[in-house]
Image 1 (spheres, rainbow, N blue to C red):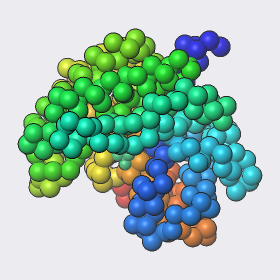
Image 2 (spheres, rainbow, N blue to C red; image 1 turned 60 degrees about the vertical axis):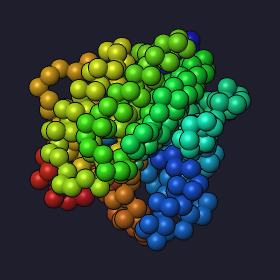
Image 3 (cartoon, rainbow, N blue to C red; image 1 turned 135 degrees about the vertical axis):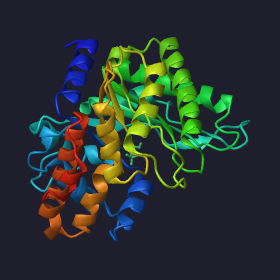
Image 4 (cartoon, rainbow, N blue to C red; image 1 turned 45 degrees about the vertical axis):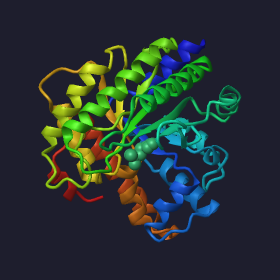
Length: 342
Ligand code: 13P
C-alpha cells in the first residue's frame, strides 16, 4: 500500500463506528505521578503490567480503535509473552506512539513554552513503524493568563506542530495534532474560547504552509470550558455549544475526526460533554470522539491499586468507562448509566 493509502486505512480504522482512542502514553514523570496518586509505584514491571492490562481487556476493541503508547511500551510484552502492539492488533486496535519530547522554554517570550522533539524525528518514526505503530501524537500546551499565550508562543508552537505532522505523513503515519489550551486558572469560558480559536487558527494556517494532508490527520483539542477554579460549572450543553462554535470557525470539513482530550475533567464530566456535542441539533462535518487519558484511566487505576489480583476488576472498570464514552460519541449516553454494574 502506498503512503496515502496506508494513512487512509488507519483513519478508517480509528474512526470506525462506536470507537475512540485511549491515550496511555504518559512520559516517565507523568505516569509516576498518576500511579502514585493511587498509591502505586512506577516500576518498569508495574508499567508493563498495567499497560498490558489495558491493551488486553477482553472486548475493548468494540469501543477503542487506537491506543497511544509511550516508547517504552512498544517493546514490552503482555502476561502471555506477546508484544503489546501485536496484542492490540488482535482486537483490531491500532497502536500509536507519542513522539514529542515535552516542553522547553521559548526564549524571548517571558517564560512561555514550546514543544520540542523535531531533531531526528524521521529516523525515530522509522523505528516506531517497525515496532508496529501506525499513528503518532504531538502535544502543544497553551497556558491562559491575563497576557498569555502571546503571539510568539502561538506562532512558534503552530510551526513545530505542522512540521511534525508533515514528517509523520512522509512516513505514512497519521499525526494526531494536539493543541491543548490548559484548564488551569480562573478565566471564564469566553476567554478559553478566544485562546482556543487563536491557537487553532494558527495551527491550521501552519498545516497548510507545510502541505499537510488534512484528510489524514486527527485533531485532538481541548474542550472550551471555564478555568478549573470557576464554580459552579456550566451545564454540558453550554460547554458543547462553546466548543462547537470554535471548531466550526477554525477546523476545515476535510479533517475526518476530532478526538478530544479530557484535560483534568472528571470521568463523568468528560463523557457528558462529549455526549452533549453529539446531541447538538446542528450537523457537524467531523466525527466527534474521545482520546482521553485521565478520564478513561482514573477508574481503572482506582480499581487496580497495583495488585495483580485486581486485574479483572480493573479491566471491567475500563470496559465500562470505554462503553459509556462510546455511547457519548453517538449522543446516546445518559448519566443514569453511571449506576450500571461494571
Ligand atoms: P488527558 O485526557 O488526561 O488530558 O490526556 C490526554 C492526552 O493525551 C494529553 O496529551
